[in-house]
Length: 255
Image: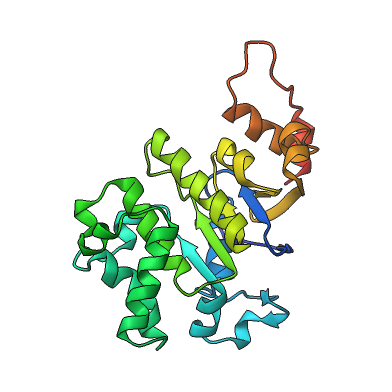
């Protein structure tokens, strides 16, 4: 006999807001719905109910180009997100060409300015992704995301594919860009140190739902939910006997 098929909603009854210039950290274990939520926000998937609003307008009423002018992704693996046959200049200029913004000279100026902003030398413009380090490739990916001057970046595990020393450089870059351009960030990560460094607010996802949300310092230091405490305990180096005790009924309470 076969068991009946259960329908599982990857994201269910999620309500979030993002303020101008704010960094919202989205945390949770693998499979909790974080990446699905990012695809919904980017308009890559349509919600079965509800909607995403950009500046008060439902995303379902906007074209892909309209969404891209406001919201851009920065993916986990910069190498796979870049075309290996395109130079840095070609990759970063592509969004401007697709949107028909500027003539050739204006595009070259804009690309050079954006490359400067992400801390890459201009000689890198002629390089291919395979000729760059992981950190340099992620800077290229960030430059490409910034070229249209969006108001929001969705950063899905933006440092997890990088060495620890390079992670710090990219985090500092995102922090500086957030201040200088007043860009809002949605930071999706399982690395709580990354979230602690960048986020103003934190939302915790569990089986497709937001179970806890608040100021980053409050959530990361004194979480209310048992699941969040377990998530924090698993990420911290805690001496034996000093961890946070969890009760079975507490864990069940967030399901």
